[in-house]
Image (tube, rainbow, N blue to C red; front, side, top):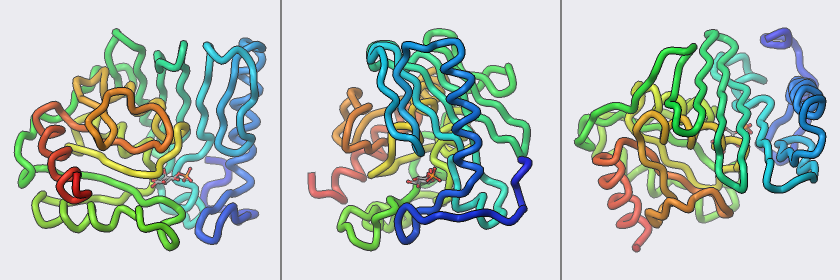
Amino acid sequence: MEGYLQQHEIRHKGRIDLVTEMDGRSEQYLLGEIRRDFKSHTIVTEESGILQGNQDACWFIDPLDGTTNYAHGVPIFSVTVAYAIQNRIVLGVTLDPTRGQCFSAERGKGAFLNGVPIHVSATRELVDAMLVTGFPTDLKKSAKNNLDNFSSFLMHVQSIRRLGSAALDIAYVAAGWLDGYWEIGIHPWDIAAGTLLVEEAGGLVTDLNGETDYFKSPYALVTANPVLHAKLLTMLQSTNGR
Ligand code: IPD
């Protein structure tokens, strides 16, 4: 928040893939806090790569999810952290510092917004659903740019949002504010906390083949309550010729 709406030192990881000095500062802070108490753990980070350690105890951190929003001054960004034991996420937290909203989940103990339990929506029909998605940063070069899925859904659902922070997109599905999320070409640090949030909030998370073993490359997700999830999956599979 200290750097929000200030001038930034912007570096380009790709032509449209930005990083600010605040991504680095936030990451260094998180790394310091985790390393202080858990010296032997592995930490998968957006900006510093993988800090190798015990693979069975692994953290995922995105120090600033929604960097493009942040760099433009749009107040939709988050800090998201998750912890996995043997590749199974057991703890996830996504913080929206602009609204003071902290989404958290611990496996088997539920999902919460500032300590109050949250649940996915009960929306059953596509026509009543407000979905959210994002686009990969290589969309100008790749055929897998999500545009075909976007246009198919747009003709069948109530509405689609593109908020710009995948971690918040998924947290909003867990809170029942948005009904469903899908994205292709996403990164593990963007979605690690969110997947647990949604599962603990009563939602279903799979890859685009409907497999629950989704936390692996190439990262692609669809998530919603179980009834709506089945309809989203059918739509995605017919659009992608499966
Ligand atoms: C991005 C955001 C965006 C998603 C992109 C991500 P970043 O993360 O989560 O919503 O569509 O795929 O790369 O780069 O702002 O941390």
